[in-house]
Length: 155
Image (tube, rainbow, N blue to C red; front, side, top):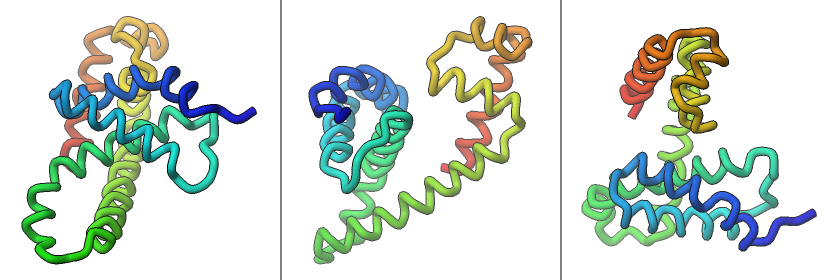
């Protein structure tokens, strides 16, 4: 069964917007990132796997946010470079950065990684994460903080 664009947007738009706003802190930029995320997902080559669609959308949103941070620098450096060349370069940068982030996530302690993913990906509150991992709420907060610090060093 194939999903329509409208169904995809209705199901995940609020999650993507919340994630984008978490990244940038700017509701207007989060709106732009959310809209562009769905346009890129829908116009990408190949089909979207339903099992991983939310993670795929979050990856696109994160990359768009990072592009927005680099845009002024890239525009200064690009000069008269054609748009296609810049986008290819940006794709290589994104792939490299994604590889580093995934390696950093893999390098986290298992309990730190689990706490972070349950909080960010699954949007569980600290109390629920504590129950699932058999930890105190304070320990969960420390693990999430520690994991975010390690990932921030990659950026």
